Image (cartoon, rainbow, N blue to C red; front, side, top):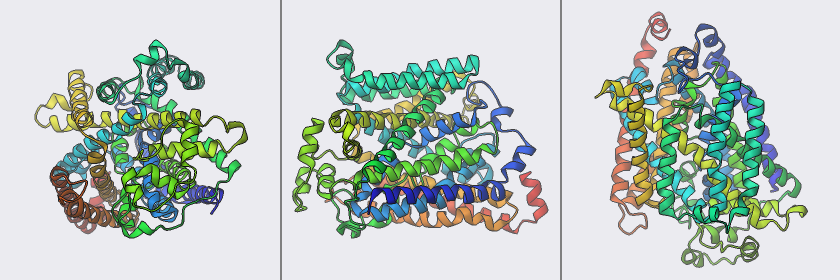
Length: 600
């Protein structure tokens, strides 16, 4: 198969889905226009100039897309390429349209109906205190693990990489300048042009600082970065959303989308052949990257890009406090998810355009690769052109950089720029992930304030500065400790199952809300169908991991702690879905008039 065929076909499917299914969800299921006429969004009714701020639709889209599009759409499809291109492509397209876009839109809608509160608070009001407590506890577990896992990917991208550290770090003062200018003048166009130009200038100046005093200062090791990242996240969580988080995510989204537009253009120019088969020999398990079979692990490995529970944190955290109009949910919630799916498909193209032996040599340890009986094809010359030994650089990030570099350097004008493109993509990946870290930490702050507010009421007020500082510091300490003391393998494996459990919880809450507000109760199936698949998948994957890895002393990933955490989270999920089922039955049997009064 040629890459152009895959890309064009995928984009057409997603555009049709947005036009038809997205409109159906917005008009028929969620009735956004009627909501627009009935009440203002929380950004207007609770405007405080800090967290609740009415925001331009495209700025909100930029923030939301930048926040949800973290490591998942980049790394997940690359690791899942082990099974061949077909399982990943099918899961991305079906999962994003039927599951992810619906999940993101209904979670955002549900949160805005409850004044932008967290999913835990929404679950408490819609399903009762038991489900609310279990949801909050699961969310706190998952967000802590998520932030640590995402940060670990950044560590290895920026480790002893002054160019990347400079280019990523300089986005912070640039974003603050853009936020201040836009806040003062309201001129988004000038702020955007100047901010984006400064970021691109920083990218191209990056190589110049190497060997200078500033370059030596930014030549940081893993432990130093492990301290710096939580400190940055503290300020991103505590400062007003318009000052740092929103403008930084907005500007970053231009780079994210711009790079992938460039990659799409490169694919159309080069039209690389997909070197991978549709299915590999590892679909039944025993692969060098993922030990499990294609199901359920294709749906656990590829989260963001198809459906991801992390999106529920953003959709019930920062974004519902920013939307100017109810109808913006279609663009920001449904639309951003489909754009993220395109990102994931391009990452899949970048991985599968490599020779399979080269791919496995990068993503497997040298000892494991020797057992595969494969001979690399282009890896040696790629290593020489990039100036880095690429063997055994597991995790997916390097594979994406190599794949994108391979495509770009096939264009005649760029054939001597392999090293530049490789470093640029590494920096781009780090920037991609950091925008999720700052939003995720802010959401963790909201969760801590919700929990703590039950014991000390002032803490629940998000406009109380001492509470903000305490909750932000505690959130950063929790995931910062895991970051400083853990490793990517021990954290990321647990994240895979827990993240999709969170998506199941988001769909449970969404189904509950739709049952209350929709004109036709069968519209509830928009959530129940993806929920049925995902809940079975995540429970089987959790069981498989606990049995074969976490509590198997002979497995490389043996970890009693991870096994216990997995069991606890699966139990929390079971309690939530049982509680929800009882609630659905009661709501279904309730007289229509009573139900209308309750949800008005």
